[in-house]
Amino acid sequence: MKNKRQIAEIVMILSFIFDSYHLSVLCKYGGTRRHLLWMFFGLLVFSGALILRQTTEPATMKNKTAFIVKLTSVIAACVLFSSSIIYSAIPYHGALSWKIQDLIHTREVALTHTNIFDTGIEGILDDLNAALNLPEKLYIAEQFTVDFDGTGKISAIEVSYMEKMRTIRRAPI
Image (cartoon, rainbow, N blue to C red; front, top):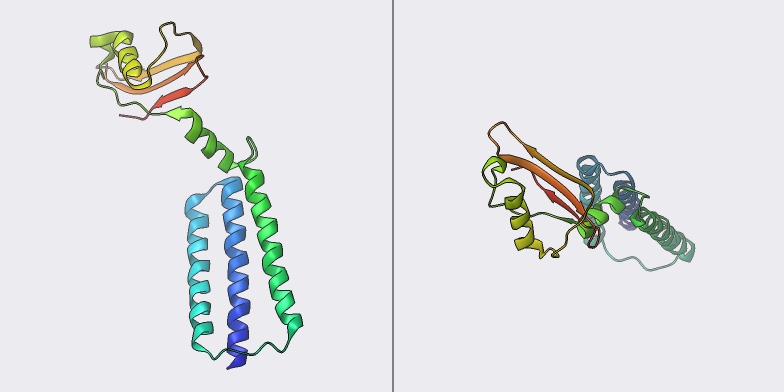
C-alpha cells in the first residue's frame, strides 16, 4: 500500500508540473483551446492520484531524502513557471500582455444610431459622448474607422483619440 501512495504522490507532482507548464505556455503564446484541454487532462490525472493517495493508509516519513526531492521539485516548478507567467505579463512579451492591454485600454460602446446614412458621424459621436463623457474639444490622434454595409448599417467602429489615448472598439453588430 505504501508503494501506491508514493506513486500517487509522484504522479500528483508530475501532473502539477505538466499543468504549470501548459499555463505558462498559454500565457506566453496563447492557444486557449489546445492548452486548456491539456490542463483539464492534467487536472483529471491529479484528481485521480489525489483520490488514490487519500484511500491508502498514511505512511510514516522514514525517507527524508525523497520528501526533500519532492518538495524541491514543486518549489522549483513554482518559481520557474510563475516567473515565466509574470514575464509574459510585461508589455509586448506575450499573449497575456496583449490581453491585459485590451482589458485596460479598450472599451465597447452600444450604439443606438446604427445607420450612418441617417445620422452621419454626429450620431456616432453622440453615442460615444453619452457612454464615455468625451471632452468638448476632441482631437482624433491617429484613426477613425467606420465599417458599414451598402444600406448604411454600421458593422464596426474603431477610434483612437488623444484625451488619454484610449482605444474604443465597437464589436461587430
